[in-house]
Image (cartoon, rainbow, N blue to C red; front, side, top):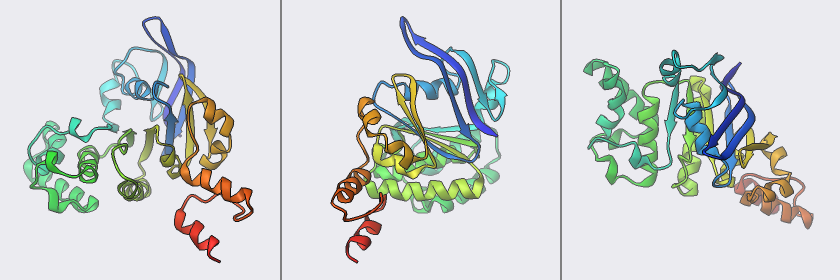
Length: 268
Protein backbone atom coordinates (compact mmCIF):
# COMPACT_ATOMS: atom_id res chain seq x y z
CA UNK A 1 0.00 0.00 0.00
CA UNK A 2 1.19 3.52 -0.73
CA UNK A 3 1.81 6.18 1.89
CA UNK A 4 1.94 8.97 -0.72
CA UNK A 5 0.81 8.69 -4.30
CA UNK A 6 0.76 11.54 -6.81
CA UNK A 7 -1.17 11.00 -10.01
CA UNK A 8 -1.06 13.13 -13.16
CA UNK A 9 0.01 16.27 -11.30
CA UNK A 10 -0.09 19.56 -13.18
CA UNK A 11 1.25 22.68 -11.51
CA UNK A 12 2.55 25.98 -12.80
CA UNK A 13 3.88 29.28 -11.49
CA UNK A 14 2.24 31.96 -13.65
CA UNK A 15 3.36 31.00 -17.18
CA UNK A 16 5.97 28.44 -16.15
CA UNK A 17 4.76 24.83 -16.06
CA UNK A 18 6.76 23.01 -13.36
CA UNK A 19 4.90 19.67 -13.20
CA UNK A 20 2.92 18.19 -16.08
CA UNK A 21 1.40 14.69 -15.87
CA UNK A 22 3.80 13.99 -13.01
CA UNK A 23 3.31 10.79 -10.98
CA UNK A 24 5.14 9.43 -7.94
CA UNK A 25 4.51 6.62 -5.46
CA UNK A 26 6.04 6.30 -1.99
CA UNK A 27 5.49 2.90 -0.42
CA UNK A 28 4.21 2.64 3.13
CA UNK A 29 6.95 2.05 5.74
CA UNK A 30 9.69 2.85 3.21
CA UNK A 31 12.72 5.13 3.42
CA UNK A 32 12.71 7.03 0.13
CA UNK A 33 14.93 9.88 -1.03
CA UNK A 34 14.12 12.47 -3.68
CA UNK A 35 17.18 14.30 -4.96
CA UNK A 36 17.39 17.17 -7.38
CA UNK A 37 19.35 20.31 -8.12
CA UNK A 38 18.13 23.70 -6.89
CA UNK A 39 15.02 24.72 -8.81
CA UNK A 40 14.02 21.18 -9.79
CA UNK A 41 10.74 21.40 -7.85
CA UNK A 42 11.52 19.49 -4.64
CA UNK A 43 10.19 21.96 -2.08
CA UNK A 44 7.21 22.83 -4.29
CA UNK A 45 6.32 19.14 -4.29
CA UNK A 46 6.32 19.11 -0.46
CA UNK A 47 3.92 22.08 -0.41
CA UNK A 48 1.65 20.32 -2.88
CA UNK A 49 1.64 17.13 -0.80
CA UNK A 50 0.68 19.22 2.24
CA UNK A 51 -2.14 20.87 0.29
CA UNK A 52 -0.57 24.32 0.52
CA UNK A 53 -0.61 25.09 -3.21
CA UNK A 54 -3.40 24.74 -5.80
CA UNK A 55 -2.83 21.98 -8.37
CA UNK A 56 -4.52 19.73 -10.89
CA UNK A 57 -4.34 15.96 -10.52
CA UNK A 58 -4.55 13.76 -7.44
CA UNK A 59 -2.52 13.54 -4.25
CA UNK A 60 -3.33 10.45 -2.19
CA UNK A 61 -2.30 10.05 1.44
CA UNK A 62 -2.58 6.55 2.88
CA UNK A 63 -4.76 5.54 -0.08
CA UNK A 64 -7.18 8.47 0.26
CA UNK A 65 -7.41 11.23 -2.34
CA UNK A 66 -6.84 14.60 -0.68
CA UNK A 67 -9.63 17.17 -1.04
CA UNK A 68 -10.94 20.20 0.82
CA UNK A 69 -13.09 18.07 3.13
CA UNK A 70 -10.40 15.63 4.32
CA UNK A 71 -7.31 17.83 3.92
CA UNK A 72 -7.02 18.72 7.60
CA UNK A 73 -7.26 15.10 8.78
CA UNK A 74 -4.82 13.85 6.15
CA UNK A 75 -2.30 16.56 7.01
CA UNK A 76 -2.24 15.29 10.60
CA UNK A 77 -0.80 12.02 9.30
CA UNK A 78 2.24 13.92 8.01
CA UNK A 79 5.10 15.53 9.91
CA UNK A 80 7.48 17.86 8.08
CA UNK A 81 10.95 18.93 9.25
CA UNK A 82 12.40 21.82 7.25
CA UNK A 83 15.93 22.91 6.44
CA UNK A 84 16.37 25.58 9.11
CA UNK A 85 15.46 24.30 12.61
CA UNK A 86 15.11 27.90 13.80
CA UNK A 87 12.00 28.13 11.62
CA UNK A 88 10.42 25.46 13.84
CA UNK A 89 11.17 27.16 17.14
CA UNK A 90 8.64 29.49 18.76
CA UNK A 91 9.32 29.01 22.50
CA UNK A 92 12.25 29.60 24.86
CA UNK A 93 12.76 26.04 26.08
CA UNK A 94 13.23 22.68 24.41
CA UNK A 95 10.55 21.16 26.68
CA UNK A 96 7.94 23.71 25.58
CA UNK A 97 9.02 23.34 21.98
CA UNK A 98 8.36 19.59 21.99
CA UNK A 99 5.15 20.04 24.00
CA UNK A 100 3.75 22.77 21.73
CA UNK A 101 1.93 20.51 19.25
CA UNK A 102 0.34 18.47 22.04
CA UNK A 103 -0.93 21.60 23.77
CA UNK A 104 -2.53 22.68 20.50
CA UNK A 105 -4.26 19.30 20.44
CA UNK A 106 -5.57 19.96 23.98
CA UNK A 107 -3.65 17.18 25.74
CA UNK A 108 -3.59 17.56 29.52
CA UNK A 109 -0.27 18.57 31.08
CA UNK A 110 0.24 15.22 32.82
CA UNK A 111 -0.03 13.37 29.49
CA UNK A 112 2.15 15.99 27.79
CA UNK A 113 4.92 15.59 30.37
CA UNK A 114 4.88 11.81 29.99
CA UNK A 115 5.09 11.98 26.19
CA UNK A 116 7.77 14.71 26.13
CA UNK A 117 9.99 12.78 28.55
CA UNK A 118 9.52 9.58 26.54
CA UNK A 119 10.44 11.38 23.31
CA UNK A 120 13.46 13.04 24.94
CA UNK A 121 14.63 9.67 26.20
CA UNK A 122 14.15 8.08 22.77
CA UNK A 123 16.20 10.78 21.05
CA UNK A 124 18.70 11.07 23.92
CA UNK A 125 18.07 14.78 24.46
CA UNK A 126 16.93 14.72 28.11
CA UNK A 127 19.82 17.04 29.02
CA UNK A 128 18.50 19.70 26.63
CA UNK A 129 14.94 20.06 27.93
CA UNK A 130 15.59 23.20 30.00
CA UNK A 131 17.77 24.91 27.40
CA UNK A 132 16.81 27.56 24.88
CA UNK A 133 16.51 25.82 21.48
CA UNK A 134 18.11 28.78 19.71
CA UNK A 135 21.31 28.30 21.73
CA UNK A 136 21.91 24.68 20.69
CA UNK A 137 24.39 23.23 18.21
CA UNK A 138 23.20 22.40 14.68
CA UNK A 139 22.95 18.69 15.50
CA UNK A 140 21.01 19.34 18.71
CA UNK A 141 18.65 21.73 16.90
CA UNK A 142 17.94 19.07 14.28
CA UNK A 143 17.05 16.56 17.00
CA UNK A 144 14.74 19.03 18.76
CA UNK A 145 13.01 19.92 15.48
CA UNK A 146 12.59 16.19 14.81
CA UNK A 147 11.22 15.62 18.32
CA UNK A 148 8.69 18.45 17.93
CA UNK A 149 7.28 16.69 14.87
CA UNK A 150 7.50 13.08 16.06
CA UNK A 151 5.74 13.90 19.34
CA UNK A 152 2.30 13.80 17.69
CA UNK A 153 3.08 10.40 16.12
CA UNK A 154 2.81 11.09 12.37
CA UNK A 155 2.53 8.13 10.01
CA UNK A 156 4.64 9.90 7.39
CA UNK A 157 7.78 11.93 8.07
CA UNK A 158 8.96 14.34 5.37
CA UNK A 159 12.46 15.78 5.71
CA UNK A 160 12.75 18.81 3.44
CA UNK A 161 16.51 19.44 3.39
CA UNK A 162 16.30 18.88 7.16
CA UNK A 163 19.88 17.59 7.45
CA UNK A 164 21.46 20.15 5.12
CA UNK A 165 23.22 22.09 7.92
CA UNK A 166 24.74 19.06 9.64
CA UNK A 167 28.28 17.76 9.28
CA UNK A 168 28.85 14.17 8.18
CA UNK A 169 29.07 12.73 11.69
CA UNK A 170 25.90 14.50 12.86
CA UNK A 171 24.00 13.42 9.74
CA UNK A 172 25.10 9.77 10.05
CA UNK A 173 23.93 9.72 13.67
CA UNK A 174 20.48 10.99 12.70
CA UNK A 175 20.24 8.57 9.78
CA UNK A 176 20.84 5.67 12.18
CA UNK A 177 18.09 7.03 14.40
CA UNK A 178 15.70 7.44 11.45
CA UNK A 179 16.25 3.87 10.27
CA UNK A 180 15.55 2.55 13.77
CA UNK A 181 12.47 4.77 13.92
CA UNK A 182 11.13 3.33 10.67
CA UNK A 183 11.58 -0.23 11.91
CA UNK A 184 10.18 0.33 15.40
CA UNK A 185 7.26 2.64 14.64
CA UNK A 186 6.44 1.57 11.04
CA UNK A 187 6.79 5.17 9.92
CA UNK A 188 7.27 6.18 6.27
CA UNK A 189 10.26 8.47 5.69
CA UNK A 190 10.46 10.72 2.63
CA UNK A 191 13.76 12.59 2.48
CA UNK A 192 14.15 15.52 0.07
CA UNK A 193 17.72 16.69 -0.50
CA UNK A 194 20.27 18.03 -2.96
CA UNK A 195 23.15 16.38 -1.06
CA UNK A 196 24.20 13.38 -3.12
CA UNK A 197 26.08 11.78 -0.21
CA UNK A 198 22.74 11.43 1.61
CA UNK A 199 21.22 9.39 -1.24
CA UNK A 200 23.03 6.23 -0.11
CA UNK A 201 20.97 6.01 3.08
CA UNK A 202 17.60 5.16 1.56
CA UNK A 203 15.91 2.08 0.12
CA UNK A 204 14.68 3.84 -3.01
CA UNK A 205 15.99 6.90 -4.81
CA UNK A 206 14.15 9.29 -7.14
CA UNK A 207 15.96 11.89 -9.24
CA UNK A 208 13.99 15.02 -10.13
CA UNK A 209 15.02 17.22 -13.04
CA UNK A 210 13.04 20.36 -13.88
CA UNK A 211 9.77 18.88 -12.59
CA UNK A 212 10.25 15.50 -14.26
CA UNK A 213 11.15 12.16 -12.73
CA UNK A 214 14.44 11.34 -14.45
CA UNK A 215 15.51 8.15 -12.63
CA UNK A 216 14.14 5.85 -9.95
CA UNK A 217 15.18 2.63 -8.26
CA UNK A 218 17.63 1.29 -5.69
CA UNK A 219 20.32 3.91 -4.92
CA UNK A 220 23.28 2.04 -6.43
CA UNK A 221 21.26 1.28 -9.56
CA UNK A 222 20.25 4.92 -9.99
CA UNK A 223 23.77 6.18 -9.28
CA UNK A 224 25.16 4.00 -12.07
CA UNK A 225 23.57 6.44 -14.56
CA UNK A 226 26.36 9.00 -14.30
CA UNK A 227 25.61 10.74 -17.60
CA UNK A 228 21.96 11.35 -16.72
CA UNK A 229 22.93 12.60 -13.26
CA UNK A 230 25.42 15.01 -14.79
CA UNK A 231 22.70 16.32 -17.13
CA UNK A 232 20.58 16.94 -14.02
CA UNK A 233 23.49 18.95 -12.53
CA UNK A 234 24.20 16.28 -9.91
CA UNK A 235 27.53 14.71 -9.06
CA UNK A 236 28.17 11.18 -7.79
CA UNK A 237 28.39 10.76 -3.99
CA UNK A 238 31.99 10.88 -2.80
CA UNK A 239 32.11 7.17 -1.87
CA UNK A 240 30.68 6.06 -5.22
CA UNK A 241 33.03 8.29 -7.18
CA UNK A 242 36.00 7.11 -5.07
CA UNK A 243 34.97 3.46 -5.50
CA UNK A 244 34.75 3.96 -9.24
CA UNK A 245 38.30 5.30 -9.39
CA UNK A 246 39.67 2.41 -7.30
CA UNK A 247 37.79 -0.13 -9.43
CA UNK A 248 39.46 1.34 -12.52
CA UNK A 249 42.83 0.32 -11.03
CA UNK A 250 41.48 -3.09 -9.91
CA UNK A 251 42.00 -2.22 -6.25
CA UNK A 252 38.41 -3.13 -5.36
CA UNK A 253 35.73 -5.04 -7.25
CA UNK A 254 32.52 -3.28 -6.17
CA UNK A 255 31.11 0.00 -4.91
CA UNK A 256 31.52 0.75 -1.22
CA UNK A 257 29.28 3.16 0.67
CA UNK A 258 31.18 3.00 3.96
CA UNK A 259 34.77 4.26 4.22
CA UNK A 260 35.67 1.85 7.03
CA UNK A 261 34.58 -1.14 4.93
CA UNK A 262 36.66 0.10 2.03
CA UNK A 263 39.75 0.64 4.22
CA UNK A 264 39.45 -2.91 5.59
CA UNK A 265 39.40 -4.33 2.05
CA UNK A 266 42.34 -2.19 0.89
CA UNK A 267 44.45 -3.24 3.89
CA UNK A 268 43.96 -6.97 3.36
